Image (tube, rainbow, N blue to C red):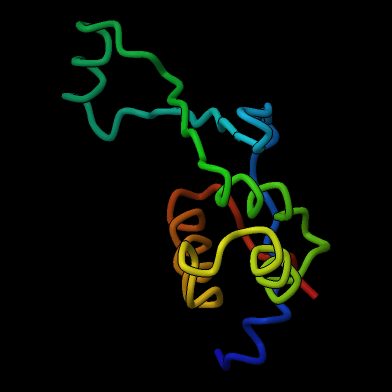
Length: 117
């Protein structure tokens, strides 16, 4: 996929099980993720140790900004622009690479997909 194509992709959340609150004026998103046993041994251990079936993923202010814009309407280029205006440069430079890496992590966790055109 070319750089131009990646800029017009529109990420969309795959879960609605999340909440956002303000911490010191910054948004903080917490995502609830189901935790599934991978095999019978995991299943036994989950039962034995009463392992919770949900796991919380807390995003920092930058991740929270990105997550809130993963609505299937906003392009990755628009998200990058939003980050560039709201977050100090040294924290996220280069913006496009940082954003791509974070979106790839969310995709690997099956928390986002890309809206079809």
